[in-house]
Image 1: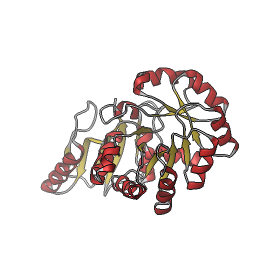
Image 2: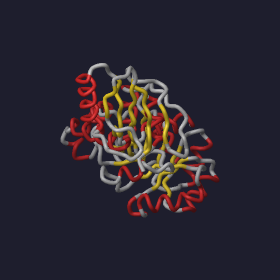
Image 3: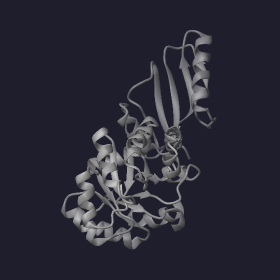
Image 4: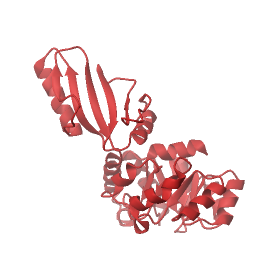
Length: 306
């Protein structure tokens, strides 16, 4: 189960999807993957939900597929047989939670109060869904509620989350990952607008991490080469001046360095490592880390945004 939780953290974003027509399941999954998100939660709100889960798992065995809106132990059996990697419930249903725990299945029950957190901890859980997130105080409400339980449990907020408030959740260490319906809305699916789902996934992933080039010193023996490289980096990362950091410059040395900012250093490190990059220890004081590898001859430092 810890491997699945780590995979959830790596994904960072979970599109919550309602599949009405079975033939839409694979195009939606492909659209999400093309946008950089190899994860989805298929809700049991339609008759074909279990078939959709099975179809996606067979077509994309590496895709992290969960089952949402699970209400009974019988449904747990159905989604497990279909291949769901984890189970999400709207609230804390003791019969469903206990059944999943007894059968060694990862369950993420919905909670909206400290009482729900205590029940989850008593059941031996380490992750819960904060639902409905925005109507229960948003990230401020979650942070206040989670404070007494710091380090013991993490949250998957869902409900009212969109591109405008995504970053506020992504920056908080208590948030394991963020769920939302805006990436693969039902009307996009019904209209066959899978290209829009891909664009939404790309935008969501970019907002989640918020990578920006803060500073760069590029080693080159040619002023024009150094300037061209800096201009390319600037177009990609949109540099923002930060006091105390090395300014953008081209240096006539054989080495160079980049300083890249992110919304949450822990989340960024997990995501980068899942993509084959090695990130060194995170300094808890400066909320920064150095990547073990380099891009060309450029060393890279990651720093969390204030």
